[in-house]
Length: 240
Image (cartoon, rainbow, N blue to C red; front, side, top):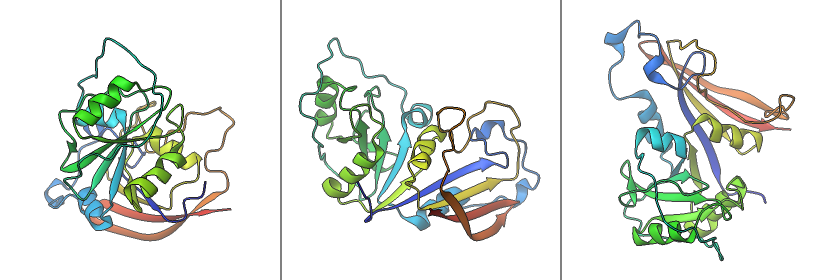
């Protein structure tokens, strides 16, 4: 399945050792020069995506940790996308293969929510819950890992062409392995985490001999020192 009509940009902010938990980063040397607006959010606004894609762990940590509970589990018989009420032009898609998060409504961070599910892992009860809250959903194959299928649905069913990938590292790693990223913006914070095992920008879970970036290379398009030592890097992916 070729996705020739969509552009997929990855935007991440990390310490210089590529770690994502900003609460662990060393103190900013030139704190007085940090200023506003925030470099990450300004870059996101400049990209102006139609949809931002997140993994469920990111949402559980930063937005909603309420679990979806049901006394029954009925396997989905006919998995078809659902278009809920779209009150905001921009959308946020959450990859949640099992359907474990219970949202209060169909908005998240001022955008319209979409949930991306696994056809064999989510339940009819969860679909009923999403429809009752006018939350859009689509599917990424039986196990929720068929990213190409989900992206194709976003294009054909929702008309989405400009896609922004915002992490976490595991979801980024899956996109990376499948060669789906066109450009990368990296906001590089002048601090260090330093601890082994802390979540990083790209974390593809595969065999130790796998090379997730095989056949790929990065072209540097721009490098800008924004303020307080924060650097904005912009790359284009090339595939061979």
